[in-house]
Image (cartoon, rainbow over all chains, first blue to last red; front, side):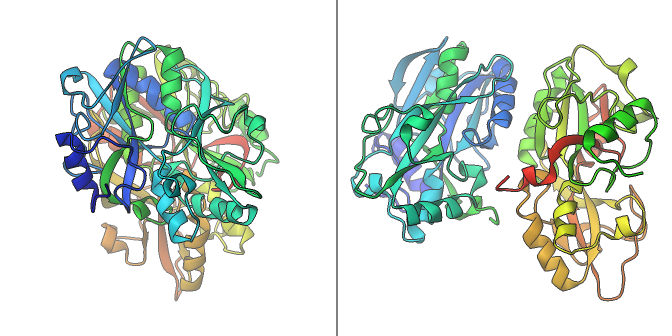
Length: 262
Length: 262
């Protein structure tokens, strides 16, 4: 199912009609990663994001207790508008649920972080195909050996990356295009040999689905907004709620609003 | 006096030998705005910065109680390395002092914000002159009618801008060049008519010095890191310490490290 606007996709997710991953499902509309934390932990997370801007580009921060968005979407509600959520307690993933209304509290703060799905439109517009969309899969994501800087109780932890395969000439263009979107992960963090960043099995992503890499193509890796979920595993905040990998918050703003000149 | 490195300028400021503004005084080294707040206010400020990234691009955040830098300079001390500081109490400027060691506390957090002095090197390298440097003055800075978004106790308040005059063809190049430095204010916020952004007397800056605007030139305005000082006037944190306008923290890193591709 493809929706005409971010608002329509959110309404479908809210009603339970849409339960799938969101890559390519509302073409042209910004997508974002969700992190929800108690106010007590919010400062440490915001400093963590400042120190690791490639995986954690913050696009919107809510006020404590308020689940309503105002920057990425006029009437978004982070409790209901994402197709699938993950709940972490003390560093353990305790459940995946389709909405978090019953989990919401007056001291919770939401963060929406830029997502590489936002620059995918620019890649498509430049004629660069997206293998995971062509194969109707979720984008593959991997844990790496690139270590993020800690901040307070948010400890050093591995960066997560998403991967798209390209021929070398298209990999170069993908660098040029995505550097212009620093608010949604920007340019790649690595090109080529997966082992160099600690990925031993490119055909077995840690999240999302495996995609084909054809002869002559090289994997291109971008920082990924799943990174805070790995940080939660080691930092063990009492409660942290996120989207499930690939199931994003979809906003009302154009992807191109997040271009450097947007 | 011009220093060979940021480290040499900091040492001179620390010893009291250097007491002047810092534009052009350590060519090639990053310069930064300082904001020091009690930990209790630090979260609100960091969200304010996230909501107003053009005037408040955060480059480094210290740990509570620690005045030592590790990102912009290896051995910097924000208590002593700036030539002149301002101390605000409950929204009032109470003193300008050459060091803040006696004011430091275990609950204070420092923020270093990008400064337009950093992209001045790129302007010079492209052959665009800097009028304030040519006239041996501090850059002119103005209060505008552009309103920053509030965050918690950091209230909505006017954006401050710095101004450099250019012929139209050079103004265009200045836009192209500075957009590539989003971490140090990025592209201008306004070009041309000062009244359009609430500046009635271009010859009377609110901070810094007036500079000549020659026939055919237009003023070009960039967001300025003095903006948080105006926010402090209305938001009235019990204590906020900043650099004095034009008297910046000078780091060890190259200006070009803050280029989009740096």
